[in-house]
Amino acid sequence: QVQLVESGGGLVQAGGSLRLSCAASGRIFRLNAMGWYRQGPGKERDLVASITSGDSTKYADSVKGRFTISRENAKNTVYLQMNSLNPEDTGVYYCNAEVSPNGYNNLAVWGQGTLVTVSS
Image (cartoon, rainbow, N blue to C red; front, side, top):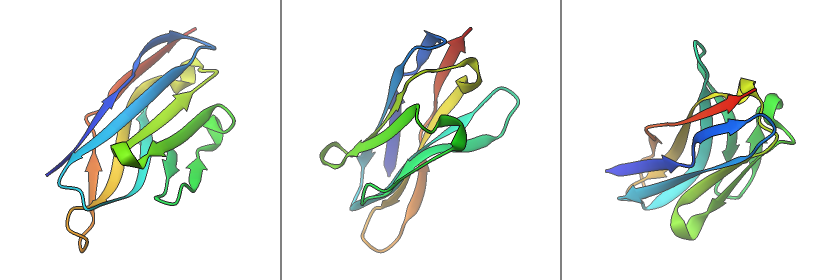
């Protein structure tokens, strides 16, 4: 089995910064694309940022220029640096990864989520 464990969420004032981390563990042959999703109050879960195994990145328009996604392959970890936070960034942030446990199949794995609250 593969687990994703997120950390770094919390309460921050508007204009502040937070850094989220997501570490993958378990049976991992290859870690492919990884990403962060956000589910705001009463909203659907939407992609915030993603990064491929080749470090190509993609961002939601609402976070471009403020958030940066990166990964540290030696630690099977993905990060999300969030700057200039505003109340609309409030929500539960979920880590997602495409994992191959054996080199043949790919699995989509989700973390348990970490809450980010931005106060005005």
